[in-house]
Image (cartoon, rainbow, N blue to C red; front, side, top):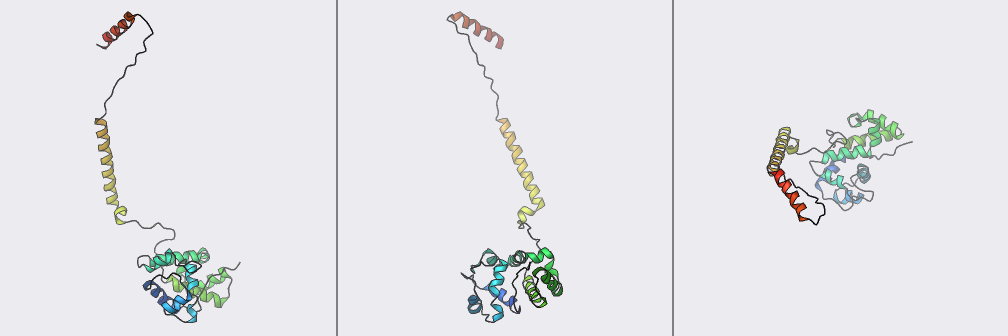
Length: 212
């Protein structure tokens, strides 16, 4: 079964539009009109840009910007957001070749032909579109990898010192608790019922003699 993946007739303005997105504000809806009137790209070849962002998971089906859109606008997360979007939106391509982003245009064209069932002309445009966006991605972090932790928690020496300090605190607490413990012995007597007081006196006398 053929896989439908979006592509642009020409990718000449992809880099420029992406840079414009980073510098512009986040619109309520990312539409063709926003691309034309706000970002300033009026060519017919750029009208498919909203569809590309939907495939990347940057905007919802109604054009509303999603979290990944704003992650792309931030310099520290832009490349990772693009890589995540491509891995997700073009998952059939990465299923066919996990290193698809490293392949040449010719190699990619063959992959797109196989995966989508399209002919040479369309597969070539799909490949060039994919490469245009992939060039703005940061592929240094593996897919599904955890977000890097701060230097404070990733420093082995700092972690060891912290663990050592924690153990010392626990040991001190246990020692303090032990020093405050005291043992008490309680003796419970169950006396037989008797109306003769002499019986109880004899019992208590015997106990006193045993405890002395």
